[in-house]
Image (cartoon, rainbow, N blue to C red):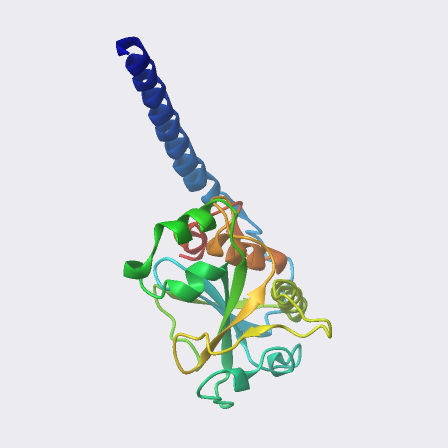
Length: 228
């Protein structure tokens, strides 16, 4: 019995050591790769469209004009799906993330182990968070970015592809799911994991428009460090 107990203890120690090594390597790799910049030179001198990059300290969104000469988001996402139905709001923010986390964890105090586990290990589904808003205020947590019409069109296409569609090709709203008066969730494509987070999605949105971005990032800091 003593030998068996010692064997199990050694196995447990090895597992804990392996887990610690994995966590350390994961965090180090995430930090280093997030500091490697891509698209540091803007090859398109046209800067006709102003967009915004914002964070709440953990989660990032991209913010687009609701309507301009390139694209009218009113033809794709519906302000009528929100409680306020305020058609006067001129901007719309997009964020992607784990569906269960989004819908059932409005505050960190609401986080459950099952939700975190499923999100981390590619077991859940995803959702798009759409927020209609006034013009964002620039600051430490909100950066204005000027892009060309072509770059903006490519970013619009990337965001559209992130929405799950019905048989008619329309985005699928999750009705009565918003946090407030001016937001709504939609079903989305892809799955959240330890290696692809909400911030990874935002980073890839920037890449799609050939904007400054991290080589790979999991955090908002890995994006905002390129916009100091």
